[in-house]
Image (cartoon, rainbow, N blue to C red; front, side, top):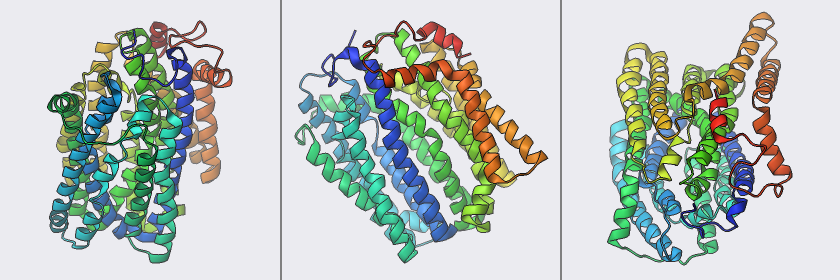
Length: 505
């Protein structure tokens, strides 16, 4: 039964079609935005060099972790709730989000001199102060939540795409002309300004401050585990840059920054799918059968992107550095390869927490985050100290395995029919086939990067089509004939939840 029949901007019977088409729309916009960001990152990296990228890595890690800290899940709590008077409820959520954003902007400004002193480089003071606006800027884009809740993905993604588009158009020419790290600060500022103005202009609800103690308690009760996750992420992201800076200076910080920048694209498919299905999960939260189907199929779809991306990055990291970035970036190769493997492991069942959040049980995320933080502190950092980069990436991979153990436990608790490990192995087999074929061709013939890449893509995606043809065909059927089936429940030709979960093995 629907918890809130008025949450959607369309009849509930269209939920399946809207979800699938929304996923494609999200993929186009988010994929386009990420492609722009990736191209921008590679171009600017080549233009500015390791030291400038190391400086920016310190600044952006500090700033974005502050942004993540202030993003304590108020948007998801707003989507999940079913209170009366949605305009007033939005104003309550927005008021809390803005107050938190102002607080974290102030905190980021206070941290600027601390960051400069810790790293021993006063250039970091002005750079950190210059990005301290970010928590407020993201809070002012809160009207996007309304479109997210309504599954109005076109407006949502147009608003979000304005940031990478404007950032790219400003950053790349500015970096080429000035050769300065400030291009990486000014470009995002322009992109966020455009996004804020557009969000305020298009907001269906009037923005107003409405502080109510009961609403604040309700939102914060949902949000504390997300805050813990953000804190754990802050320690990991900032800690690894700090550790590499201590070990090898700003250049080493630049190497880990590049590795993190490239491997973070592995989770983009998961983010696309998760943001698409979360409102649908909230709508069918009382139907575990449909939720099991959503979990299995969304996991399989995201692995189709994430695992080949990570494997390709690991296989061709040296070629990427040699042909695009230059010999000075050679020490980053082992970091890119190791973090790519760690990222691939973390993508298996990535969307699991959304199903718990939709039930108001966000606390379970804190358990996985504790495993991540513990693995980083107990395995990755000691590994770096003792065995340098190889020890660090081995520790990060072991940490990912520990996170999967936690994830498997909670997935089985919610969906007993889902065979989590076998689902992951099924997603990995096509990638293993493509990797084996590529290594065999490389060893026997050494034909060069382009032929090897073609072999990898051909074998991998051929194996994916052979293994997941029914799922891909189902998605294509909905896209080609969206009005053929109008039901949120599985149709007669789709895999039912129990057998879908079993078939994942």
